[in-house]
Length: 193
Image (cartoon, helix red, strand yellow):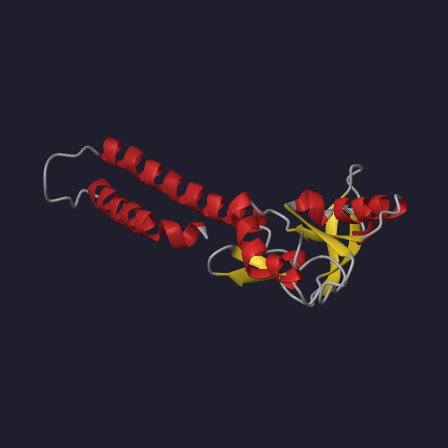
């Protein structure tokens, strides 16, 4: 991601590094450039290159579609970067508060949500689509312990006249503009009220 957007910058930095290197070796043709200034310039260019590589690695490791969960549960998306992979199943790893590695199962419905299959809306059914990031997704908890499922169970216990379904529209790492895209591309098809 960073690499794609930073290629022109890295090209310029690489060119500058070559010029500084030529100066450092005493082969520059224009002006008087001391070797000390060239050496400092070379270190600066080298530092920028190292920073770019470290930044690229951090972004790739930190983006929600790059680890085991991410490659199993998500698809790349041209407009929204990534989106839940319909029909995905597996488990994902995370470190709990004690620093222990835990593994939890996940599933993504064929409709593209971390939830059960909903299909057509039933008569008398009221649907809530809860959009969000890792909070409604339920990162670190079982599906039934996610916020949408706890809300659904709480509302069911209140015995309303309509059956209330709460659809988990959370996606780890999503921002509001991505949530809007998910709503438009998948969510409205489920006819939320």
